[in-house]
Amino acid sequence: MQVDPSQLKAFLADSGILTEVQLKEAEKAAKKTNEKLPEALVKQGLVKPEELSRLQAYILGIPFVNLEEETVPKEVLQIIPEPIARKHNIVAFRKMGKNLEVAMLDPNDLQTIEFIKKKAGLKIMPRLTSQESIKFVLKQYQKSLEAEFGELIDKEAKTISVIRDVADETAKEDLEKAAQDLPIVNIIDSLLKHAILQKASDIHIEPSEKEVIVRYRIDGILHDTMVLPKQVEPGIVARIKVLANLKLDEHRLPQDGRFKVETEEYKFSFRVSILPVYNGEKIVMRLLPEDSKGLTLETLGFHGEALEKMHGAIKKPNGMVLVTGPTGSGKTTTLYTVMDIINTPEVNISTVEDPIEFRMPRINQTQVNPKIGLTFANGLRSLVRQDPDIIMVGEIRDVETASLAVNAALTGHLVLSTLHTNSAAGALPRLIDMKVEPFLIASTTNCIIAQRLVRLLHPEAREKYNLSEAEVKSLGEQFNLEEILGIMRKEKVVKEKDDWSDIDFYKPKQTGDFPSGYKGRIGIYELLEVTEPIKSLIISRATSDQIEDQAKKEGMITMLQDGFIKAAQGLTSIEEILRVTKE
Image (cartoon, rainbow, N blue to C red; front, top):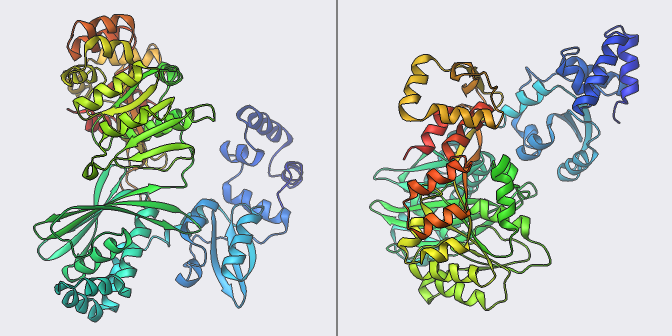
């Protein structure tokens, strides 16, 4: 059911839409860029996207529909779940009896059509449409979260007010009853679903004196999502405690737990932390996707020499690879990506973590539990007796763990771990502070990576600009711009003759779909390779500044410099780089 390129060419030529010369040029361009002919035609502006869709529909004998002004009834739209609609560019727009008309960009996607047919129990009638039509209908899914909760609360106002009365009693059975109450279940289900669809990394539920504030952390920034009436708080807390298998009648001590949400569209694990605060109990839930595809170092943001050195360090049979940065800077994701790369049948990988963020096949993961004496140090001590080739320690927090990690690296293991320092060079004095002998650090450490996460500019929500003289002067007062420009030239992201005022940078442009102009995050990194000169500096107990100066002489790109490289590539903005690198 796909349009054959020869059919499309013949139709375009016969109808006089394009000449033979134009078609040949488009074919040449398509081969060069490894694109399909229709994509090349649109890219070169020879055919408009909607015009191309209409032509394909005509050739295939499938009706074409324009939905740019169409408001789809909610009950019809919801037949296809939003994640499926977005992923496969397919929307339901009309239902007549047992027939469901769906608009799509790829009529050859028979698997999705079959899935919808089974799920809905209806006869599917495919229609071709344009990208703009799909976008217009997808926006209709985005009903505000406040409106949805407002409906739920208004509808069940009496029931929810009863929950408050029930929850005021301390009986555990009453709390269990409140947790199973339908409006509360609906509120939590909607709250989790919207967080997943908005790609939030955390949900914060914060009680105040007269209301409950819900916030989502999206791309590293917390956003107020909605405000709930105070009377629903006990039911919400009880419901989440039930899901995470926590004590319902414990309100004075912190509690931690987990639960999973699985549907046909997604599979997420939620890590729950409950903390008593003045006005009740604050809940933070971390969203951990369980079905995400394996990441690579390239997709995380590594490039050039840093990428090569990283691959070299993790392929060594022993030594330490340390990742540093503040909480929430993506350290654990980097380590999991490294483990995924080196996870082969020939090696035994064991970890000791707090908490276990993701379950990984063929990796032996141990959860720290200080209450019963299973600390990082005790867990690591036991791991060494388990014949591992590679050991991952979630975090080096104390003297004992640091000493054991270094000894494990000395005795033929590859050790991966994290530290809380602001820079790569800062990790070395930190280990010395933990009473590790400098000569042991020098002989075991392969490399140290410092990182931060910056928000990615969305290609459709950014605008190009050049720095003004005042902006260049302001940046020059804070940073060594000549040094940064030299690195950018070396990495070939700018031309040799370019000065700061010639470089194209991008800033966010607010749109309806992307209010902040950003979507997703990428890492900025500095990778310090422990070379012979740096080993000498470590042994002589040099400062972090001295070590960093030597690493820069040897070609290390700092986080700030890596940030400017990514800003010049249009991936992020200068404002975002300055936000995350300020100390």
